[in-house]
Length: 282
Image 1: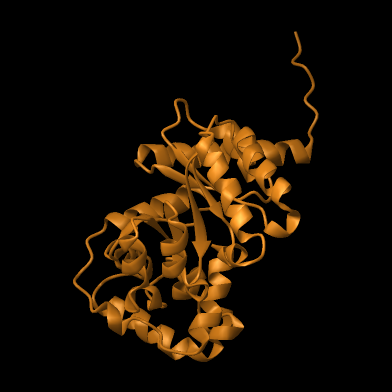
Image 2: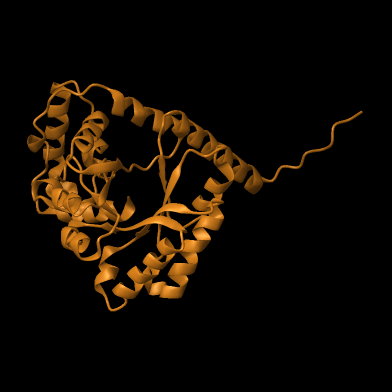
C-alpha cells in the first residue's frame, strides 16, 4: 500500500504556517493570562485570528474602524464584518482609528454610528485612538468614551507630564497605553534611527546607559515605566511571535529598581514628530 502523493503549494504552506504560528502565539498569551487582543481592519489578521482562537477563548477583542474617508456606511459595515471575520458574536471595544475624524463635519455622525453598534450589543464599549495633538482630554470630556488609547513611553513622557493621562482618567474612561516601546527607538542604534531622531543618538545612548547602570534592560525599563503611569488600565504592545511574547512577559515580570523616570525622557523638538509616526504604526 502506497501513501497518496502530496503536492506542494507554497502559498498554502505559507498560510498554514502563519495560522499555526498565530495559534501558538494565542495559546502562549492565554497561558500567561493576557486578556485583550487588539486588531486592525487591514490585511488578513482578523480572519487568521478567527481561525486560531483557543477554545474556549479567554480573550476580549479591541477592533478599530476604517478611515472615515471610506464613508459612514462602509465604516459601520466593516465594524460588523470584523466580528464575522473574528468569529465572534460581539467585541469588547470598538475604537475610532483617528481621533481627528471626530472633529470633522461627519464626526458626530461617526460617533453616533459607534453608539448605535454599542446599543445593539455588538460592542460592549466604544472609544478612540488619540495623540496629544488631538486634545484627548477635551475629547474625553466632550464625548465620554469608554476607552481612550494613547501613546506614552519612556522617551516621550509628555502625556504623563502635562496631566493628560490624569485628565482622561478623571472622565471615567479607561486608558489603553500604546507605543510603549517608542517604535523600537530604545533598541535602535545610530544608523537605524528614523530621520526625525537622527540627531538624538547621543540622548538615546544616555538613556540606555542609565538603564544599564541600574541593571535594567530597555524592554524591562519601558514596561516598568508604562505600568506605573496613573490611570492606565491596559498596556498594548505589538507582538510578532510566541518567542517575542515570552521575552516581553519575562521583562514585564522582572523586578525593576527604583528609577528616576524624568531623566530618561528625550527632550527635543523631534519628539512630537517621531511620536506621531510611532502612534500611527502602533
